[in-house]
Image (tube, rainbow, N blue to C red; front, side, top):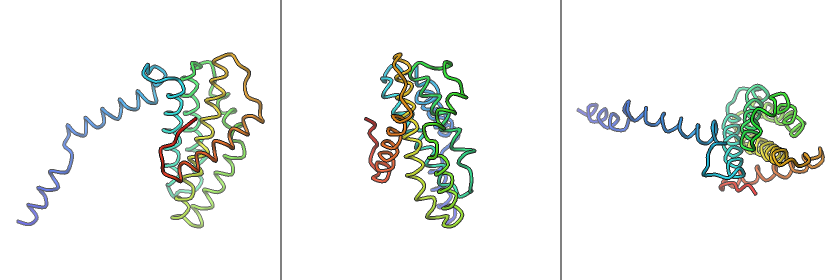
Amino acid sequence: MGNTNFLSRIKNKVPGKDQIKNLIRKQKKYLKENVINIENNKNLTKAEKSKKIIFLFASACAAIATQPIPFPDLVILTPIQILMTERLAAVWGLKGMVSKKEIALDVAKVSGLGLVAQSLITNAYRIFIPALGALTTIPMVFGLTYAIGNVMSEQFKRRSKGLATMTDNEMKEMFKKFKKKGEKEYKKGDEINID
């Protein structure tokens, strides 16, 4: 009798086939509107679209950074950061005008030693102090991705307006500023405001 009551309570909490299909449909719609075709969203400005892309991708990278397997950064996180950059190019009207090679080089140029440091630090944590390592790397990876996104968004914004691109020094300074801001905001746990 007790098992029947328990099973009926579980059955009432487990989503049915239609609920699961509806959830998947909602997720696909969300991804289409906020990632895949965000450049076509008429309800948001380009700056708002960029903020949304940056936050979504920085969050995804931070979540992936929690996994305990060493050395995934360059194999998993970097391609995600490059995809974020491609989406930002689309938002600023540069889709197809900037090659994947250019994007990869720009990401490397912007974050340079940051990617190498990220990889070394996160892997050292994963190997030597796995549980704590995941928690301490989350803000770092979020901040790094947040900074890459903001620098690249500004670069694409300037290109789209026919303005001069940022100098290497401007990119480095902006990268440092946004990496620190992303880490700080992530640690606070507040909604991140991108100015």
